[in-house]
Length: 339
Image (tube, rainbow, N blue to C red; front, side, top):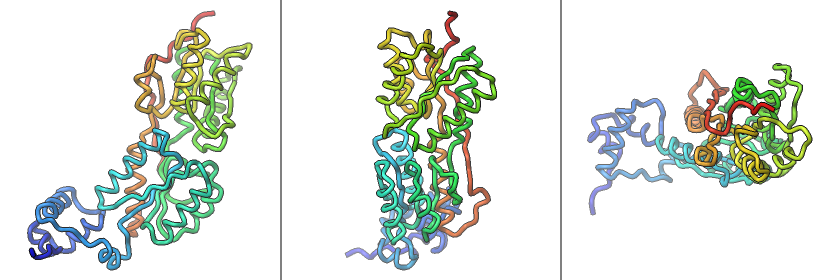
């Protein structure tokens, strides 16, 4: 039977200290890329495999982080999960995903389990108004970082996107094209990002002195193509139609475009449509969708790296990070038709 490979064997092979090898195995973030790659290559070539139970007993850590997410069927959240897993893997961590299905009780249960020894820290996208979990997060005994949806009352570390700026970019784009009758199809009333986007819409309307304002806050459970489709049909039945519509996300915008086309109207010749998020399918629909892209990968990466620093008891000079979105102009928007 061959002799078991030890940390010291890896250190000698890589030409580094045993401490450095241990830090790489534990996912310590403050190691140069060159050194990390050298150690990882040595581990691969020698076939070193740390015993997870012994490792956990020595360090008091599980090398696992939890990711509590509202809806894995939504491409927006699925993208976040993919990046969180990739970044955690780079640092030697596994990810335990809790899909809450937009249910506060499931969210609270996931947080409690992770706090009771299942993980070393938690990344969370808060559910709905997250009142139960919002209070719970203030008292957990392991590090927590919120990303994407963040309650105003939440005071812990977070990384999100400036949703007021997201709506402002969309409104300014349509305004510059000449639109003055711009409607907004909002997401569900419980969604924090949807509420912020509706607030941004209302602020722009008032600041620009627009007389027309029409928004439909969603009262359904989802923020999907169906909601965009039915809300757009109701809007088209109004006596005074808009020349442009901003939807709370791309999925709603896709449903809205379908409704407009069913009414034998043209996008963008009759009505321009703007979405948000820039999901993959947005550039392939007919017409390709103008949208506001969120830096999802950057947000997820920052969230995980911030969490790992907190796990290592390292200070971070920026605990509250809000990223800027980017306008992506495609064929679903154009100047309003002269009437």
